[in-house]
Image 1 (cartoon, rainbow, N blue to C red):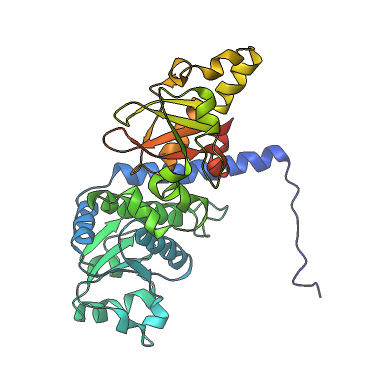
Image 2 (image 1 turned 45 degrees about the vertical axis):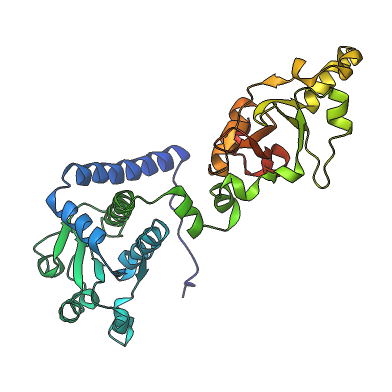
Length: 340
């Protein structure tokens, strides 16, 4: 008897592999285009229901649809719509207690006849919880009993036999993304709010405000435009992290320029040592690039990378320097496509 772990490999050239993969991707892409072209009133009704939801969006489904449902619930939660996944089998064994009046059940099933999902419908309605269905046909059990049904139609699955959930789950996932993001937009969800839900890793840090990561005023070198270069570099010293820039201010303490280590090196290379005892305003960069403290770090990264600069002063509403973003602090967060 052959082992269950033995597998049969059918000869498949690289050309055939790529052609097959391209066909699968095109089939799923065509299905998305078809669904997008037929979105209408039912989708808008679902959006209005989700926007008006005073509780949470509870997503349910079984099998592959359940896995898609978990992702939709996660996307909604991270974009400002409180949501979680409820497994329909666990639901009928006590977890229905998590549903409350004002919640909405988003039920997902391609056939609309999934027993575990359909048996929840009457119970959920008795709890005064609205039901939105994502299913192929409006005439299915799920489609006919839901308050709002987004029917995406029948589509052939992408595998050779048309059996494995592939095209249908791609459509479900895309529709879930569309629901989550349209609702997020209508609720005025901001990048700052997104950052609150994503505090970990480089993504979370890039979405934090400049104010949280900048070098504060007491950490940077600030000099008068009348100071000499020598005075600016020798007498204006700061403890802690050393920055390669001196921020220059005018008589009103407003930013008027910046002078960097690179500027100093250039003077020395050109044997212009006599300029070291001249006013720094003569050689500084006038009207430098700046960023507001309320901007995101991602916006500051864009300024640094696109303009090939190493420091950007942070200013308040009156153009007074209150901090500095230094590339040495954030180099690891610059995307490769911007750093190149």
